[in-house]
Image (cartoon, rainbow, N blue to C red; front, side):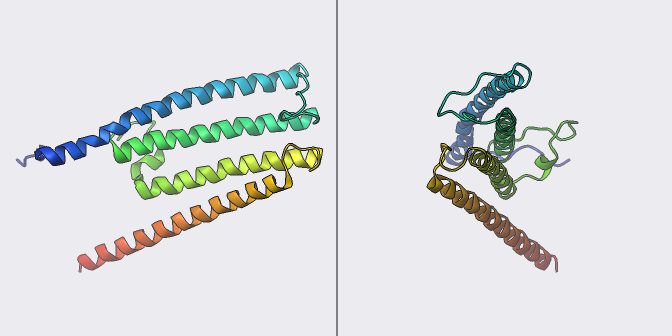
Length: 201
């Protein structure tokens, strides 16, 4: 019968390897942030219900939605809800994927609610998924900006022309960064596969 016990580490490697647990408070802090986003979602949802069924209160001058039609205000609130959900999804990926990759196994094998992506997650896959999530969040913010400007006009919007330009540039940089990360990951995977294939022959 083979010995399945973990190899005993000398003190220094054991200390270095155990230092990964210092990340635990960080992930617990992100769980608190997740709870705050749930609260924020509830606040925005109450605002949406008030706007739709009770004709809401007109937003004050200088706040998002000021001077806009009820339809646009509702659209902006819904986009805000989607934004909160996407950020929450990003938090889940960082908490679950990061803990599984860098701290310790969660032992979810065979669990009916195990995320599909968690079975093959690693640092490279996690980076690509996070980059795509950030692009989605940036897209929502940019869409909200375009809707507000389209409804009020550039002169009346709280966004300046330079501000919109920089938002667009940053969004494009996010896209290019995600493409670069995905391409680099593809090259590394291809190189690793070729090396494994060569070792088998």
